[in-house]
Length: 364
Ligand code: MRU
Image 1 (tube, helix red, strand yellow):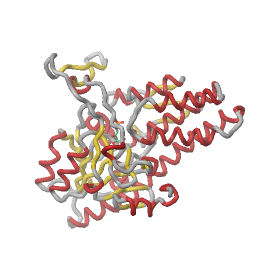
Image 2 (cartoon, rainbow, N blue to C red; image 1 turned 90 degrees about the horizontal axis):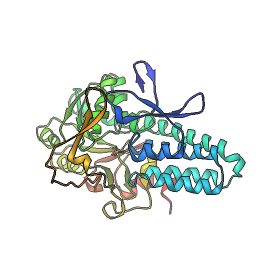
Image 3 (cartoon, rainbow, N blue to C red; image 1 turned 180 degrees about the vertical axis):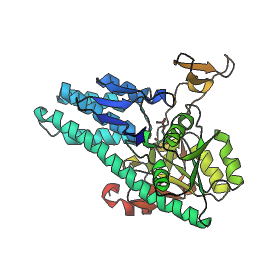
């Protein structure tokens, strides 16, 4: 997407062959771009959330393997890079998907051919991600048009949680792609942006994206969604996801489940923008089979911002003696999901509908 007239992706290889990312820790205050030069840089960028969002985590891991293959294309280096990157974050399935794909492409090759093949595969993963998200936008746009038609052509109010925007993917975003395409098509769309404690991806990232692209939006605290839905102020909810099981259970940023419950109670459609690499075909029961990342309790006991000198600072908001739990994701059972927006079209969150849309991926 364009920022001040310049088209960016969230990760790219520059003319000199270096892999660059937008370091998201500094947004919305600064568009800071950094090069990742060692396997350790790539692992750190994922685990410390310089990059985040399921598709971007996968793309970053793919480039991490490619970098390592330039240094050492041996079997041992390939296996070690995979293990190191896989250990960075547990929940988003895109990480394992991208690493498995890199391994499948590289392992059969002689070592001398791996560096070039790895760069080509990582670039293909990124290009495919852009196209997948563009198509999710096209299919999601139909939903927004329907919502507008139901209101006789008026403004469509969408509520979203966390950041499933272009900087959570390589470009376009998943949940935001229909919104960007609707705005480009001249539709009147307004977005309620959940702040998304504890790390505030909504406030810091989604709001930054929407503001940069001139999309009408308002930031709301995480607890406002139910109130807005009760009052009829939300026409539909669209969220992203980190892993969807073969039966349609949706794992996403903590708090998504509560939004789905509120949506169901108030008759508001709850849709999930789902690129196919985010489907875990090996998992059926989301509650028992998806590992939920538990992050540093400091993210809960403190809030983060910039001091007047532009340094990141954390300020405690509870007593010193108070500890915290920090589960980073939750699971919304398929029954609460109105529909999935995939690159191949809309589908119900049921095993039958998912298998019918992706017979080539679903396996036996
Ligand atoms: O912890 P994060 O910021 O990586 O969590 C991101 C989310 O939960 C997103 O909603 C999800 O990855 C979908 S991104 C298109």
